[in-house]
Length: 320
Image (cartoon, rainbow, N blue to C red; front, side, top):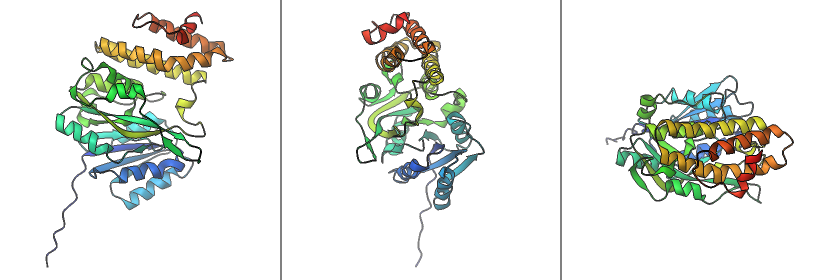
């Protein structure tokens, strides 16, 4: 009897998975890749100089599944450098990102790759939710937040920032699948040595894309770590604040340079409504007056754009 074996289909998307000292969560992230309904993926696992078992977990994954490849940095280089190391190895039509402490929903790649394949767009953008610590000692996914829904709901195919300016509010790398050709055409790379690197890169993706798609489906569950070690949980520290404000301003500058006034205005409104109130609250009692000055300077810059009335929760910072 002749047994015909169907050869595996070539991968269509490379998922870049950077990780530094995330051994507690890495297996869960990799399991979410293994569980994808679209099986034609390959993943570059980038161990960014971890001092825990992250690298060992990555190596074990590659030993058990040829779809995984591993890059080890000798010392920590930062999230941008880790993602760029992965970009150097992309050999598929599409590329995606998943941080090693987060997890994909099962149909994430199927939905995102399916959208851009069907439409011919350069980028597909999906919704996401936070994974927050629960009372049982684990993590539970929350609801889609309003600004996420504004960017991704309802579904759109072949849209642009002119037609859908609120998409500019989805600024995370890991909620997207994009054509690798876009990265090559536009010379896109993550800015090394800067925190909140997604802010600028996302706006560059939107402005360089010939068109993009949005889908309302949740594609990623984004972990807010119980130990408070996520960068987004350290905005009360002055160096982190400065990086954050620089990234926010840099994203707006990309939209300005690309002559996308509606998207820039949408982004400013969202920053005033969502990003700045908690920073103003932190500034009220912050022991370093330089923190208040930094927040106040940034609020004044945005207020000068005249995009929207400044809320009472933010107006206080105009006097700092």
